[in-house]
Image (cartoon, rainbow, N blue to C red; front, top):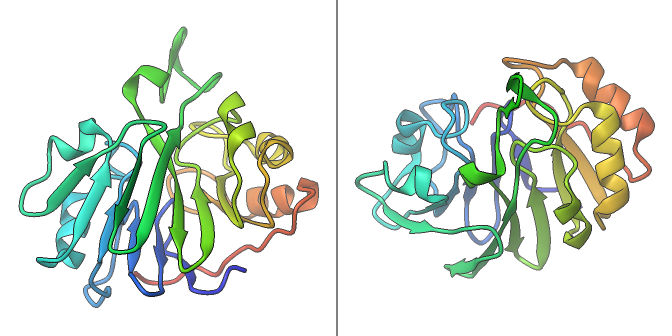
Amino acid sequence: MIENIHWLGHDSFRLDGSSTVYIDPWKLCAEAPPADLILVTHDHFDHFSPDDIARVVTPRTTLIGPASVTDQVDGVTALTLGAGETATVGGVTVTAVPAYNIDKFRRPGEVFHPPAAGGLGYIVELDGRRIYHAGDTDAIPEMRGVRCDVALLPVSGTYVMTAEEAAEACRMISATAVVPMHFGDIVGTAADAARFESLCGVPVTVLPLEEG
């Protein structure tokens, strides 16, 4: 179920198949394969990296993101999505879903990822498989509507769900397999991924870190 899903560190992934799809490309190597489709969840530097996007963009590449991202890109075809909207590009169907914090505060009363900022997760339908990338989020009520084969969930806490909260999210999401992310860089460690694996009621695979 997780074949051809490559974890590139933090929240960054490459999905290989009939199209090559990057999600939040960051710290990619110079030899990273070219992209057919790039999905960016929000405009924080560790998710929206113009330099890394430039490494994999070709004339056929399309970038999808919220307005806070697409308003800043040049030299690539860009589509703006909001939560609940869907686009199909080159046989890949992408549905945007909400991603936001409930109780991870930058300062009292101000969360790191407020709903109004328009941050997104994505459900990617590629080659008959549905892959959900949650983005930077807490366990939010909208997850009850997510149906997927593989869920990519943050587990580090601080800015996103803790391991315990991610396990609770798994009880809301209908998924066959789960992959932890958002650890090992900036915040979170392999211990968070292991803790999540021990708590989650869905089969968990901790993917090896690969170069982009």
